[in-house]
Image 1 (cartoon, rainbow, N blue to C red):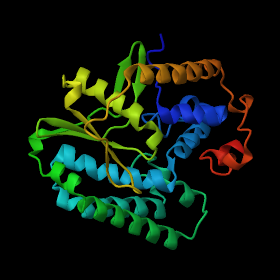
Image 2 (cartoon, rainbow, N blue to C red):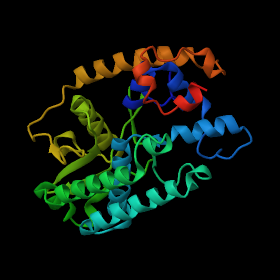
Image 3 (cartoon, rainbow, N blue to C red):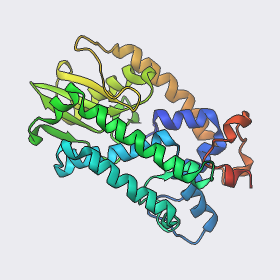
Length: 291
């Protein structure tokens, strides 16, 4: 059994990309409650672990405000102002260097940390992108229909990372929340990769069935990303359960084989680095890894 080992699509992709990056992320960096501990090296790796590329940074800002709607009862009409408020806080945190003392307070841009761009232009572009994303969501009929529902029909995902069991395998996946509308339940998920929609839909079904006791035929799947603000899988969309289980089992088998190779190791530099040096140039940990 592999209970206790967090399996997710993002971690699996990281492990396949670079075993050293994966080790630094999962084994070497301090956990969130150990920040500031005596070992400065591992504490610094924990800071690097928080770095986000622009796409993830924007998604994190958007998800913060979406959680305010689901959990705190914020009006959807306040989405834009909330997103900009969180953006300004994150920007100030970076410009004032406050992230050095608190790695988890606000999203931290990788391109800012590594000084890869002109800061003024970068922040202006990000603000414009977030404003445009909010505008398109607030003009989307389905989005506005769902968020006009009674807040009692909102089911926030309160877990830090929601998970379901497929047999003995615990799979973690992103989901923002669920909204009941006309006796259907709409699962809202931030995802930029359409290749995973079908598998994510399968996980939605399991989550709704086992956590909320909702029958599968009443579950709908909504994916949000900055390029295509809202994608609703058709009501006649059907998940091929046996195919998805086979796919997940294959992914997880390869993942755990590599993961187990790293369990007794303590030195990151004893683990092979990525063979594709082009990927090294965009890695969060390159400052540490390259020395």
